[in-house]
Amino acid sequence: MSTVHSLDASVRVDRWNNSIPARLTVDPGDTVELEMADASGFQVQPTWTSKDFREKFDTTKVHSLTGPIAIRSAEPGDQLVVHIEAFEHQGWAWTSLIPGLGLLPEDFPDYHLFIWKLEGDQTRSFPGVTLDLNPFAGIIGVQRAESGEFRTRAPGTFGGNMDVKHLTAGSTLFLPVATPGANVLAGDCHAAQGDGEVCINGMEAPMRSRFRFELIKQTPLSSPYARTPGPLNNPRYSKGDQHMFIESAENPREACKAVVRRVIDFIQGRIGCSPEMAYTLCSVVLDLKISQLVNVPTTTVTGYLPEAIFDQ
Image (cartoon, rainbow, N blue to C red; front, side):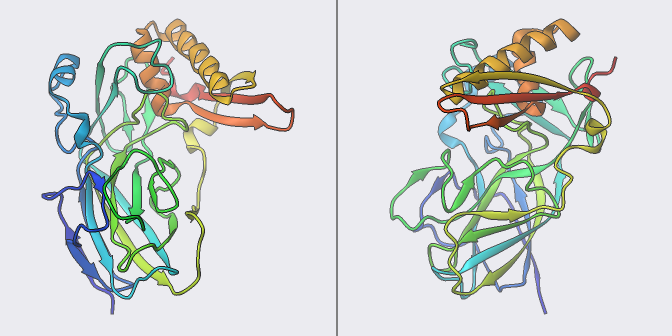
């Protein structure tokens, strides 16, 4: 019979390091209810201003993860199956701009912070806009095979900071086990995010979650794989038009930049906000998609912005 465990966020991890001992060991089939800090590790507070963020925020504490969780009998060559069962936000989130980071650092050289109030499955914090929430964990991963300490920013075969917004409740994630016990870490939860997370953050939020773990023994997996029941697009957003901004370039990143700059201009013209706020909105709702790769050397990128987010 499976057991339900709990693990709080009183001890947090901000580096991959396979020498860190497990905080909890569970059997295959067991469920763990996790408390997860926001990506800042409870640094950012709902009362903070952009000035507070600039003066107090310590980037070396990002990301702040809960774990490790060891699964008995897990060993290299196995697949860890993570059944993602639930997420519960705590009523608020934040999105920032940080000099030198994000898709458009040359356009936004200053710190900026926006605090979201989350109400049920929506937020109306952004003037003139109603956004639907789509909570998920930006980071779910197993400890890496390599010895040493590694920043959590880059994802890899171990999972990690993948920021796949469709890993919501009801989805299942498969990860290749690289160390005995697998030693799962999770966090960096987002209440909502656009595909691209262009300004550097989604809606960064502390959350509670529930995961159930299983093993597929000695069936190697090269990299993460997942299944989701969908829908891939928010149902309310799908009922209205999608504004599509299309750009082509030899460098895909330059095509993305051109798209986002156009969307920032569009949002400013539509609701009269600052460029910083428009960029913030892009990060939590704009979806960047590759439209074509066949016309070498040119890549086409399309940005999709749902009309349904606008209140008028």
